[in-house]
Length: 305
Image (cartoon, rainbow, N blue to C red; front, side):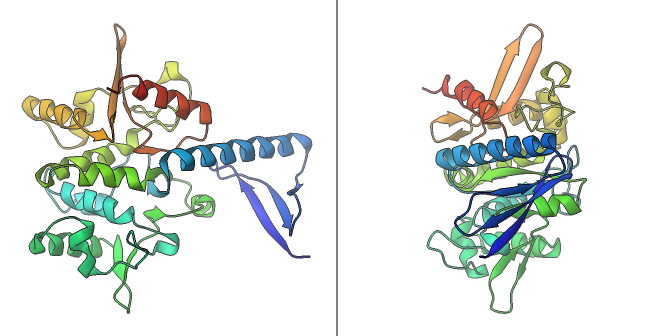
């Protein structure tokens, strides 16, 4: 009989919780040091399977976008441009990444590997100079590269399709979120071309999204809701390079109008004590508790027309 060895890793801490041997046509065999460890593995497996099945059933396929908490995303790119001039290149990279498959391979909706000549359709633009500029800068930054056969590949230090545990184990100072491919494509293709650069702001503020509650805060790993250091609209706007009051107002207005199918992309919960700004988990979500994501769905569902 053939066996496959599986390691169980706490993706939050990188700790290896135990190992399992999975035989052909057999149930999972778990080897652990003690009963408590085995129970922890069982709980994590159950939660992991539940959230994966729930998310895939509701949102379809997704890729993992790699980043650091409270650290500028795609820094190599943003440092090359002043203000928000990098935005169009950021969102085009995200859209290209939404076509990623295993091993960094990029495939279009028909399953064909993507070449540079396909970028006109992928990015939905006829601006050849703009395509060349984005392609050149993404290549220069090492975010994408081309094979000898002319196929485009995405750097798996930024985007991973499939399991990310081993990568996180070797890179403990980083984290990831699930970005839902069809949903981000819907937002991009339904947005007027001249307004698409603003979509990059959804990802420029990503390092400040709380992994459990999907709200913006200065302590994105905090699980105690009473300890969250929430960010307001001015905070978010400044993180995205907007300083003047009029620009901050426009920043909020632009994000406020975004829709994903019939649901809002950004939500706000306001009380006398303060406000919490959150992102619809249909865009991206990194938590592993099915009840948390269900609660977020309900919040956005209540306001749909």
